[in-house]
Image 1: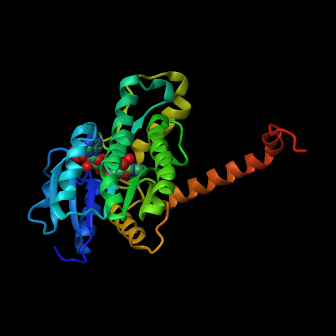
Image 2: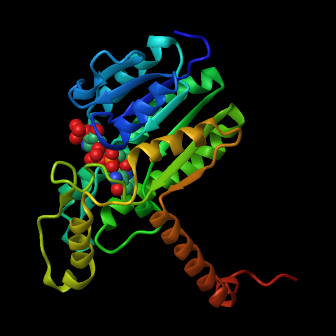
Image 3: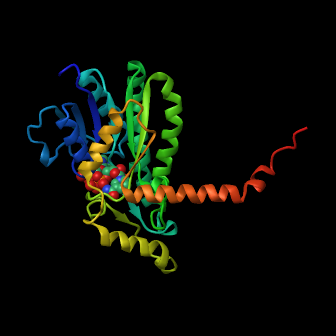
Length: 279
Ligand SMILES: NC(=O)c1ccc[n+]([C@@H]2O[C@H](COP(=O)([O-])OP(=O)(O)OC[C@H]3O[C@@H](n4cnc5c(N)ncnc54)[C@H](OP(=O)(O)O)[C@@H]3O)[C@@H](O)[C@H]2O)c1
């Protein structure tokens, strides 16, 4: 391996954003250790610089071993990219306990297990960058995405706190919040819809779920451009903690901030009324 090459660990490179990321990073001359559930991916024939490893995100024991094996390969990991995930759609009340647990296992506990497995190595190195692919749903959720959003909010919360804990140790954290990207995310091979249906939510959650079905294959976000944007953020001298991707995600984030800010102002007197009086 060339000494100036960085080593990336990327989950879920079989397709979608993870595949685009692996291809863009390899084209930039860095080495990639990419995971897929089977340990295979059809696009990866003889890709120089790529090592494939099997990883199912609900298997936290396997995550520990895979991360250790990945580190041992080059005796270092420079960028750890938690990309793999899937969406669970439906009203909050429609989600079963099993559907919720699985969405959290894949979108939160799996990435958390990757982070806790890799941190001892990154602390030892006193360097490294963890990039967690969240979602615009992790910043500004819509009706119909509540449990998926909750798992991504959990990833956001952990990442924001962790960023403060590891900054003095030379480790960086970035959350990526994509809007709608033209991957297989909305295809029946990826997205899940809660089985339960409650008619009272047809005009809120149901309407949004139906709308998402109409934009599948027409999403504005280009995965390759998204991958290049993530690479640019990682390359930056001061990488962002939050990287919102796509004009739709930017608009929704701005709307959320404006609404939150206006609400804070409107209620600030009641907010501050709970302090003990100062003498
Ligand atoms: N595309 C969007 O509009 C969008 C928007 C916001 C956020 N995101 C986030 O972006 C990330 C990538 O999604 P994508 O758009 O590239 O979707 P995708 O095309 O459906 O690809 C999802 C990837 O995650 C892997 N994966 C799913 N469940 C897994 C599990 N249990 N264990 C291991 N790997 C698993 C898939 O592997 P298999 O091929 O084996 O299924 C695949 O490699 C996800 O975290 C998603 O939440 C996407």
